[in-house]
Length: 173
Image (cartoon, rainbow, N blue to C red; front, side):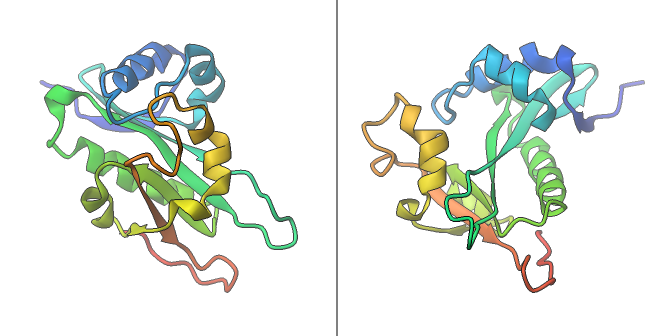
């Protein structure tokens, strides 16, 4: 009987598989170093079937630049599914689970930079200006070696705005 697929939090033993899955999609992802993964593996979810990790997704907190009016933003990062099993619902399952978990932190918004805006639009993300994402640029884009400038990178910035301050919680699809 085949083992059922599951999404779970990553553990130390998963770091090598996470590293390899990210590297399999380098056209779409900024590579992450092994030491970085070692320090941040606890922010990853993995999709596992029959003892094999087929997809990964992670998140990070963006820096707060204005303490009087903080923008509490989380970013979805390192979202990758092994090429041979794409279009089987693995990415959808990972993203839906990640969005539920991130909502529990009650951020103002959840961000993603992507080459596939149509995909993320299905989950409630809307396009936003990269010029407004200085914390993101500070954290990751500034060290990217793929493009000369974060503002000329072809990735599309997208966000889900949440109503944290009014106590209302917008449900993510």
